Length: 405
Image (tube, rainbow, N blue to C red; front, side):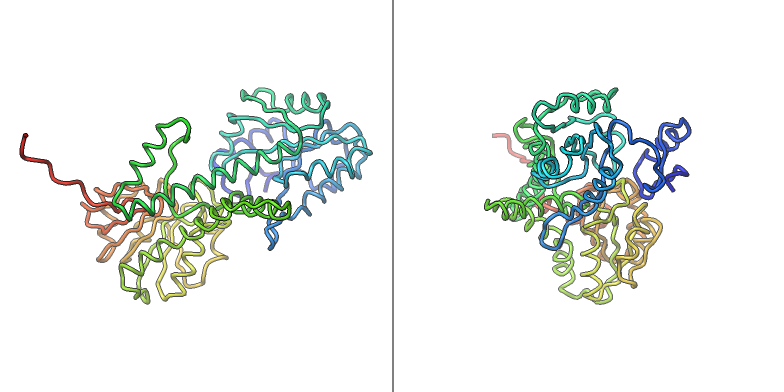
């Protein structure tokens, strides 16, 4: 597929970039057994580092790549590790395997966001390079590899660079779980999570605005937070905050189920529910650890009839869904005679759908649970939906005063 300019996954702008590079002869795709020439100045390792059942990181793919590189006798080569490996991994590799072979090791973590990977490569917010003390040559080699990209460099040691990657993902996951905790409190006391989030974003200390929702998913946050918790445990460090982040995220995923049970008095048998979005975020077809999958399984287990729509991820999700789930091609087909709808992924196809037509397709009570707070509650109510958001279920504002004292 890659040799033909096709990507095995959906990422906006990637295929056109790949096709251009192939046409201009700047990239080739080979099986490693077909490589019969020197590796050049840099070998970038970007294999998967999947989780083990214990929460530890499986490094077999990384080790396989390193073994292959070592077998080619590439003295003077710089190995740039972009795979997310536990802090301390690089130091062990250098001490045990690489130094004696004349291979230099650099940690160069990536911070690409799925759905924005091409833009993030062109315009990253930082480039982190972790090298052994005094290895200025490897640092300069990595800088040349990133030539033409305007971004600040952070130069540090190998282990600190590895920790930057884990800490970044864990902190973002913590922010998501924090705002989700606050959204639950907003519902209880009658506050608006939208206004609270806006107020927080105006303080430079608390960062950009972050939205409440049904939790994070994907291949990075869940795996890396669990891995950091495991690293802490095996290092004798207690990280209660990270465990709380995991707990909150797991709880958020079931909010739509609880809301449906409450609205329909626990009678979900035969209830037709449409799920809008399967991928863990918009602009990707990645369904790894996606909140949609567990929710759909729970709904089917309780007897609901489930229809699901996603503009990109349907094929990726098909093998992980119960056979009874019907995958459809658009919002109106998903809404057909559904009594309830859950928005899981804020695709533009969903947010910008003709909601007046959606209302006509659905059956009463036209219950919509907005798991991403992506829609206008006022508009939804005017169109006849029973709308529920996350942290948005505050009472309406009081009527204007008529006295003038």
